[in-house]
Image 1: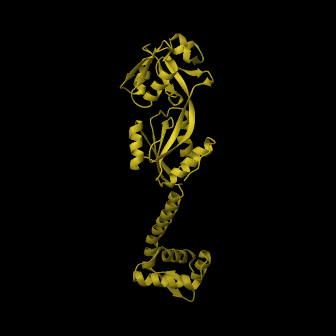
Image 2 (image 1 turned 135 degrees about the horizontal axis):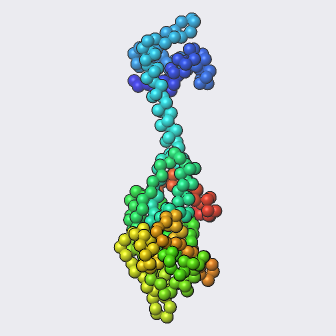
Image 3 (image 1 turned 90 degrees about the vertical axis):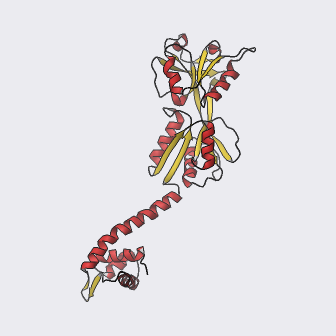
Length: 303
């Protein structure tokens, strides 16, 4: 015949108050209910926890040891209940965010830092990989949400536009164009561009082809199977230019500067969307979506 946490709580209250009457009042229960449950507890453990007399109650030697052991049990049970309630409401638990963008600056970094400050009890983790790996992680339930460039439809996933960031040119500080505060696409038609084969390199390559191709002449683009960081680290030697999103501009490289690119309508922007599996039941994901929606004044429904 096991005992329950409520009986332990009654016994601890009686020990703290030195009276069944005062303990019952503190717990807002009938004294008969409290004393009856403590008696059941004593029968289960096989020893008297309290000595009863006309003057009141006092703990036995065995009772003192029992209460000492019972306190952490009740405390841990309370913590467990609070943790599970918080997890069920998305105020605790974990959130895995997938991305292939740098978090040295920009909205992704600001969003993750803002979420972490607002929800310190949530274990926030991230994974950086290419688009295919991130979608596979979403499908397998290993990733809760992926932040990707653009907005494409994938079967089984939902996506919503989150934010936009400026497109910038990374170029050597010694380059003549570095003297300007901003650049236009027409300024870049005779330049060589170094891009990475990894995401979001393909999207940036498509952007350059669409913006710089003139009369059948395509821009000079060299795609390398190296990281973004490796490409940026060699630009200062004058080997070429590269296109980056605003999120990368927090990292500095020797003799490399960043200049925003403008089109006919003003600053060139690139959009980011959030992707998540439609069947994802993580309540923390719902709170994260609400956080992003409110932060960027968006309008989409959250399941």
